[in-house]
Image (cartoon, rainbow, N blue to C red; front, side, top):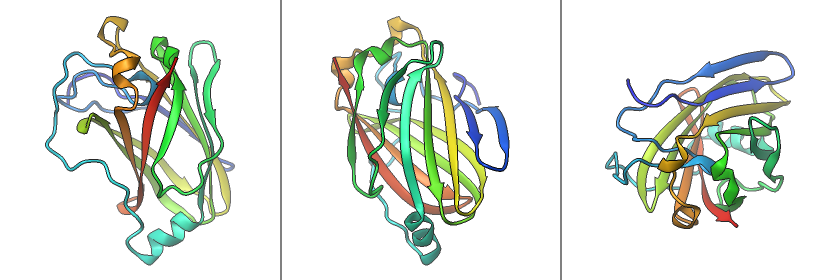
Length: 204
């Protein structure tokens, strides 16, 4: 595949440390970025897919994983300076759509670090995330992150760094504000655990 580089993923837990990974690109996605660094060269829907949705666990194993899974906190920071620009410690029910408010000046960062801590009661053979980024209802990009094995009754930290495109290619915060929805699918290998939705607002 060709296109822009994928983000780096750094994942740690109490038993092992996985070095950064460089993810493959997604063909035909122009230059879009998730969360605080969504950018564009030209507004053009890439895929004809269903819209974003919340999906509850479909079987007993998935429900057991979700019942024991908790996001403790998430933050985003300027990867060059380390300054934390946004942090949220109130995640609660992942099956409820939530709004997040990030500062508009995050769009000026050349690289953004996104980090979150999660706890899991269950053992997972291969935790991974699939994210779809929607702008005004159209899917602009898909992101894939692979954490791997999760020890039962463990607390883990997962970090990704995301490079922005040139400032001239950035969409203004006023256009992005409230129009970006991030759909995150949680998997244990091929088992879909759930899907959650975040709507992003950019505060001045």
